[in-house]
Image (cartoon, rainbow, N blue to C red; front, top):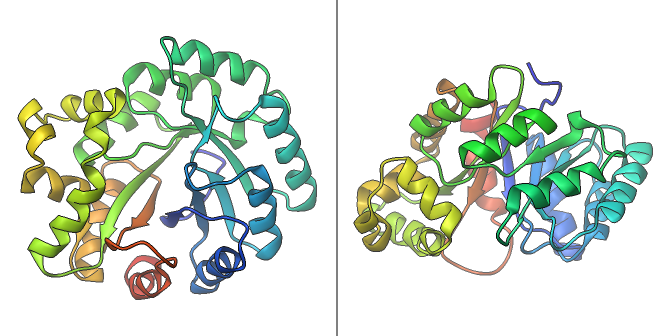
Length: 272
Protein backbone atom coordinates (compact mmCIF):
# COMPACT_ATOMS: atom_id res chain seq x y z
CA UNK A 1 0.00 0.00 0.00
CA UNK A 2 1.04 3.58 -0.59
CA UNK A 3 2.14 5.64 2.39
CA UNK A 4 -0.20 8.44 1.29
CA UNK A 5 -3.68 8.41 2.81
CA UNK A 6 -6.27 10.89 1.59
CA UNK A 7 -9.30 8.83 2.59
CA UNK A 8 -11.81 7.42 0.10
CA UNK A 9 -13.13 10.79 -1.07
CA UNK A 10 -11.80 14.32 -1.34
CA UNK A 11 -12.64 17.54 -3.15
CA UNK A 12 -11.06 18.92 -6.27
CA UNK A 13 -11.57 22.62 -6.90
CA UNK A 14 -9.85 25.82 -7.86
CA UNK A 15 -8.82 28.01 -4.96
CA UNK A 16 -7.05 31.35 -4.69
CA UNK A 17 -5.85 33.30 -1.69
CA UNK A 18 -9.08 35.29 -1.50
CA UNK A 19 -11.09 35.33 1.73
CA UNK A 20 -13.86 33.43 -0.06
CA UNK A 21 -11.49 30.66 -1.12
CA UNK A 22 -9.93 30.35 2.31
CA UNK A 23 -13.42 30.15 3.82
CA UNK A 24 -14.31 27.41 1.32
CA UNK A 25 -11.23 25.41 2.34
CA UNK A 26 -12.27 25.69 5.98
CA UNK A 27 -15.82 24.66 5.07
CA UNK A 28 -14.57 21.50 3.32
CA UNK A 29 -12.45 20.70 6.37
CA UNK A 30 -15.37 21.27 8.75
CA UNK A 31 -17.54 18.94 6.66
CA UNK A 32 -14.98 16.19 7.15
CA UNK A 33 -13.36 15.96 3.74
CA UNK A 34 -9.78 14.78 4.29
CA UNK A 35 -8.20 16.33 1.19
CA UNK A 36 -8.51 19.11 -1.37
CA UNK A 37 -6.93 18.82 -4.80
CA UNK A 38 -6.03 22.30 -6.01
CA UNK A 39 -6.83 22.67 -9.70
CA UNK A 40 -3.81 24.07 -11.50
CA UNK A 41 -5.60 26.46 -13.85
CA UNK A 42 -7.19 28.72 -11.22
CA UNK A 43 -4.13 28.56 -8.94
CA UNK A 44 -2.53 32.03 -9.03
CA UNK A 45 0.79 30.85 -7.61
CA UNK A 46 2.55 28.73 -5.01
CA UNK A 47 1.78 31.24 -2.27
CA UNK A 48 -1.87 30.17 -2.42
CA UNK A 49 -0.88 26.67 -1.31
CA UNK A 50 0.77 28.14 1.76
CA UNK A 51 -2.25 30.35 2.38
CA UNK A 52 -4.81 27.54 2.28
CA UNK A 53 -2.69 25.32 4.51
CA UNK A 54 -2.29 28.12 7.03
CA UNK A 55 -6.03 28.88 6.91
CA UNK A 56 -6.92 25.30 7.91
CA UNK A 57 -5.87 22.84 10.58
CA UNK A 58 -5.78 19.25 9.38
CA UNK A 59 -7.06 18.89 5.83
CA UNK A 60 -4.45 17.83 3.28
CA UNK A 61 -3.76 19.62 0.01
CA UNK A 62 -2.46 18.22 -3.24
CA UNK A 63 -1.56 20.34 -6.24
CA UNK A 64 -3.65 18.74 -8.93
CA UNK A 65 -1.76 19.84 -10.91
CA UNK A 66 1.29 22.11 -11.00
CA UNK A 67 2.26 22.54 -14.64
CA UNK A 68 6.00 21.98 -15.01
CA UNK A 69 6.17 24.54 -17.80
CA UNK A 70 4.83 27.19 -15.40
CA UNK A 71 6.69 26.54 -12.15
CA UNK A 72 10.39 25.92 -11.59
CA UNK A 73 11.61 22.87 -9.71
CA UNK A 74 13.52 25.15 -7.33
CA UNK A 75 10.39 27.12 -6.42
CA UNK A 76 8.32 23.97 -5.96
CA UNK A 77 11.02 22.43 -3.77
CA UNK A 78 11.21 25.57 -1.66
CA UNK A 79 7.44 25.75 -1.18
CA UNK A 80 7.30 22.07 -0.25
CA UNK A 81 10.18 22.39 2.25
CA UNK A 82 8.55 25.33 4.01
CA UNK A 83 5.22 23.53 4.32
CA UNK A 84 6.84 20.26 5.36
CA UNK A 85 8.44 22.12 8.25
CA UNK A 86 5.37 24.15 9.23
CA UNK A 87 2.64 21.57 8.52
CA UNK A 88 4.19 18.11 8.07
CA UNK A 89 2.34 15.76 5.76
CA UNK A 90 -0.28 18.25 4.65
CA UNK A 91 1.04 19.05 1.17
CA UNK A 92 1.79 16.66 -1.67
CA UNK A 93 3.20 17.84 -4.98
CA UNK A 94 1.11 16.81 -7.98
CA UNK A 95 2.80 17.51 -11.31
CA UNK A 96 1.87 17.48 -14.98
CA UNK A 97 1.24 19.89 -17.81
CA UNK A 98 4.36 19.02 -19.79
CA UNK A 99 3.49 20.30 -23.22
CA UNK A 100 5.60 20.16 -26.34
CA UNK A 101 7.11 17.35 -28.39
CA UNK A 102 8.79 15.45 -25.52
CA UNK A 103 6.56 15.54 -22.42
CA UNK A 104 8.17 12.50 -20.78
CA UNK A 105 11.64 13.98 -21.14
CA UNK A 106 10.38 17.28 -19.76
CA UNK A 107 8.86 15.62 -16.71
CA UNK A 108 11.92 13.44 -16.15
CA UNK A 109 14.15 16.50 -16.22
CA UNK A 110 11.89 18.30 -13.77
CA UNK A 111 11.87 15.32 -11.41
CA UNK A 112 15.67 15.18 -11.60
CA UNK A 113 15.71 18.65 -10.03
CA UNK A 114 13.14 17.84 -7.36
CA UNK A 115 15.40 16.07 -4.88
CA UNK A 116 14.02 18.16 -2.03
CA UNK A 117 10.56 16.62 -2.47
CA UNK A 118 10.53 12.98 -1.33
CA UNK A 119 9.10 10.42 -3.72
CA UNK A 120 6.29 9.64 -1.29
CA UNK A 121 5.01 13.19 -1.69
CA UNK A 122 5.09 13.34 -5.50
CA UNK A 123 2.28 12.42 -7.87
CA UNK A 124 1.80 12.67 -11.63
CA UNK A 125 -1.28 13.52 -13.65
CA UNK A 126 -1.06 10.40 -15.81
CA UNK A 127 -3.39 8.93 -18.42
CA UNK A 128 -1.35 6.96 -20.95
CA UNK A 129 0.80 3.87 -20.41
CA UNK A 130 4.16 5.64 -20.66
CA UNK A 131 3.14 8.35 -18.22
CA UNK A 132 1.79 5.67 -15.88
CA UNK A 133 5.15 3.91 -15.99
CA UNK A 134 6.90 7.18 -15.13
CA UNK A 135 4.52 7.71 -12.21
CA UNK A 136 5.23 4.17 -11.03
CA UNK A 137 9.00 4.56 -11.28
CA UNK A 138 9.50 8.06 -9.90
CA UNK A 139 6.49 9.10 -7.80
CA UNK A 140 3.97 7.77 -5.31
CA UNK A 141 1.27 7.31 -7.90
CA UNK A 142 -1.09 8.81 -10.44
CA UNK A 143 -3.96 11.28 -10.59
CA UNK A 144 -6.01 10.66 -13.76
CA UNK A 145 -9.09 12.59 -14.87
CA UNK A 146 -11.97 11.72 -17.21
CA UNK A 147 -11.74 7.98 -16.92
CA UNK A 148 -14.23 5.16 -16.50
CA UNK A 149 -14.06 2.53 -13.75
CA UNK A 150 -13.02 -0.03 -16.37
CA UNK A 151 -10.03 2.15 -17.22
CA UNK A 152 -9.31 2.60 -13.52
CA UNK A 153 -8.84 -1.16 -13.36
CA UNK A 154 -6.34 -1.00 -16.24
CA UNK A 155 -4.41 1.81 -14.56
CA UNK A 156 -4.27 -0.11 -11.30
CA UNK A 157 -2.85 -3.10 -13.15
CA UNK A 158 -0.12 -0.89 -14.62
CA UNK A 159 0.71 0.89 -11.37
CA UNK A 160 0.68 -2.22 -9.23
CA UNK A 161 -0.57 -2.50 -5.64
CA UNK A 162 1.95 -0.23 -3.94
CA UNK A 163 1.14 3.08 -5.61
CA UNK A 164 -1.61 5.61 -4.99
CA UNK A 165 -4.33 5.78 -7.63
CA UNK A 166 -6.46 8.88 -7.09
CA UNK A 167 -9.16 9.43 -9.68
CA UNK A 168 -10.75 12.83 -10.34
CA UNK A 169 -14.40 12.49 -11.34
CA UNK A 170 -16.98 15.08 -12.37
CA UNK A 171 -20.13 15.27 -10.25
CA UNK A 172 -23.43 17.02 -10.98
CA UNK A 173 -25.89 17.13 -8.09
CA UNK A 174 -28.93 17.17 -10.36
CA UNK A 175 -31.65 14.54 -10.81
CA UNK A 176 -33.08 15.79 -14.11
CA UNK A 177 -31.22 13.75 -16.75
CA UNK A 178 -31.34 16.38 -19.48
CA UNK A 179 -30.11 19.18 -17.24
CA UNK A 180 -27.46 17.03 -15.55
CA UNK A 181 -26.07 15.87 -18.88
CA UNK A 182 -26.12 19.39 -20.31
CA UNK A 183 -24.05 20.68 -17.38
CA UNK A 184 -21.57 17.81 -17.69
CA UNK A 185 -21.41 18.07 -21.49
CA UNK A 186 -20.51 21.76 -21.26
CA UNK A 187 -17.44 20.90 -19.15
CA UNK A 188 -16.43 17.67 -20.88
CA UNK A 189 -16.68 19.13 -24.40
CA UNK A 190 -13.39 20.99 -24.10
CA UNK A 191 -11.21 17.98 -23.36
CA UNK A 192 -11.53 15.87 -26.54
CA UNK A 193 -9.89 18.82 -28.33
CA UNK A 194 -6.69 18.14 -26.37
CA UNK A 195 -4.53 15.36 -27.86
CA UNK A 196 -3.72 13.67 -24.56
CA UNK A 197 -7.33 13.45 -23.47
CA UNK A 198 -8.51 12.44 -26.94
CA UNK A 199 -6.02 9.57 -26.94
CA UNK A 200 -7.08 8.54 -23.44
CA UNK A 201 -10.76 8.52 -24.35
CA UNK A 202 -10.06 6.41 -27.42
CA UNK A 203 -8.10 3.94 -25.30
CA UNK A 204 -11.23 3.68 -23.17
CA UNK A 205 -13.26 2.61 -26.18
CA UNK A 206 -14.86 5.88 -27.24
CA UNK A 207 -14.92 6.59 -30.97
CA UNK A 208 -14.06 9.69 -32.96
CA UNK A 209 -17.78 10.24 -33.39
CA UNK A 210 -18.28 10.00 -29.62
CA UNK A 211 -15.58 12.61 -29.07
CA UNK A 212 -17.29 14.94 -31.54
CA UNK A 213 -20.93 14.45 -30.60
CA UNK A 214 -20.58 13.72 -26.85
CA UNK A 215 -23.46 11.22 -26.67
CA UNK A 216 -25.27 10.40 -23.45
CA UNK A 217 -23.35 7.16 -22.87
CA UNK A 218 -20.04 9.08 -22.89
CA UNK A 219 -21.39 11.73 -20.53
CA UNK A 220 -22.82 9.13 -18.16
CA UNK A 221 -19.49 7.29 -18.11
CA UNK A 222 -17.44 10.36 -17.25
CA UNK A 223 -19.75 12.31 -14.93
CA UNK A 224 -21.75 11.08 -11.94
CA UNK A 225 -25.12 12.74 -11.54
CA UNK A 226 -28.33 12.23 -9.60
CA UNK A 227 -28.99 12.14 -5.87
CA UNK A 228 -26.11 11.97 -3.39
CA UNK A 229 -26.75 8.23 -3.03
CA UNK A 230 -26.76 7.76 -6.81
CA UNK A 231 -23.49 9.65 -7.07
CA UNK A 232 -21.83 7.74 -4.23
CA UNK A 233 -22.73 4.45 -5.88
CA UNK A 234 -21.21 5.56 -9.20
CA UNK A 235 -18.05 6.86 -7.55
CA UNK A 236 -17.55 3.71 -5.48
CA UNK A 237 -17.20 1.84 -8.77
CA UNK A 238 -13.73 3.40 -9.02
CA UNK A 239 -12.84 1.99 -5.60
CA UNK A 240 -14.09 -1.42 -6.65
CA UNK A 241 -11.86 -1.15 -9.74
CA UNK A 242 -8.77 -0.43 -7.66
CA UNK A 243 -8.70 3.30 -6.93
CA UNK A 244 -7.54 4.35 -3.47
CA UNK A 245 -9.22 7.73 -3.60
CA UNK A 246 -11.77 9.66 -5.66
CA UNK A 247 -11.46 13.44 -5.91
CA UNK A 248 -14.95 14.84 -6.38
CA UNK A 249 -15.12 17.71 -8.86
CA UNK A 250 -18.56 19.29 -8.42
CA UNK A 251 -19.79 21.28 -11.40
CA UNK A 252 -22.98 23.34 -11.40
CA UNK A 253 -23.09 24.96 -14.81
CA UNK A 254 -22.58 28.37 -13.23
CA UNK A 255 -19.61 30.52 -12.38
CA UNK A 256 -19.42 32.05 -8.98
CA UNK A 257 -18.86 30.87 -5.43
CA UNK A 258 -17.48 27.50 -4.44
CA UNK A 259 -20.13 24.73 -4.41
CA UNK A 260 -20.20 24.44 -0.64
CA UNK A 261 -23.93 23.52 -0.52
CA UNK A 262 -23.22 20.60 -2.87
CA UNK A 263 -20.21 19.48 -0.80
CA UNK A 264 -22.48 19.56 2.23
CA UNK A 265 -25.25 17.59 0.51
CA UNK A 266 -22.78 14.94 -0.66
CA UNK A 267 -20.90 14.58 2.64
CA UNK A 268 -23.29 12.12 4.36
CA UNK A 269 -23.23 9.80 1.36
CA UNK A 270 -19.49 10.00 0.80
CA UNK A 271 -17.98 10.34 4.25
CA UNK A 272 -20.05 8.00 6.40
